[in-house]
Length: 200
Image 1 (cartoon, helix red, strand yellow):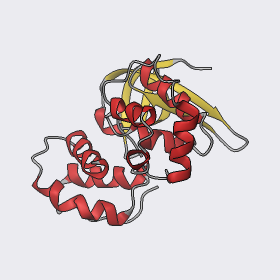
Image 2 (cartoon, helix red, strand yellow; image 1 turned 90 degrees about the vertical axis):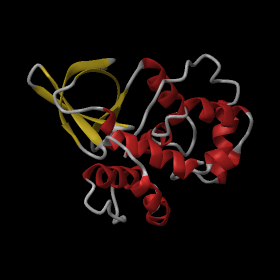
Image 3 (cartoon, helix red, strand yellow; image 1 turned 120 degrees about the vertical axis):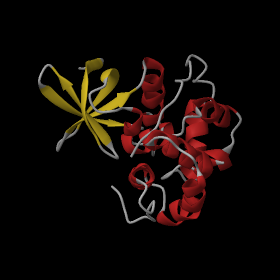
Image 4 (tube, one colour; image 1 turned 180 degrees about the vertical axis):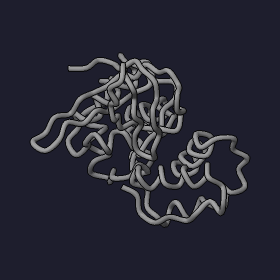
């Protein structure tokens, strides 16, 4: 129904943003809410998922990212939340290369993707991603308790976002000391570094 929304970011949370379009606030689940800032004017490509209990909007930085999302959710075992968690890693080239080369160990680093689902990703998408131009950068996110950023609000937001993405508490705790040493300037910086550490 919707192709994109153009408006102003009214709120940013660990798992979604609210986009104000002419006085109407749209809650949009996105791979990395922290690449947006409040009061920023944005154009966000969207996908609307309709179920018996909810209507949910998923948002993307550009058309290519949306197309990759649509391919991911057509894979058995990959739902919209899992697809967003996969897209949260900004290395979309690496993702597509892993599918192309049957790199199951790379694919199983994403939350909710085991060996069976990774194999299904390869089976369903191998040879079907050549028409995509990878989106430049992306990121995303029901949280559980995680280690804190010890007074660093940007790091706290990053840790909450990683938990909302589905990464395990133990994995997040393991990289938290490295993130405390990281000289990030924003939540997005910390999130990008956290995702890099979790998937390297």
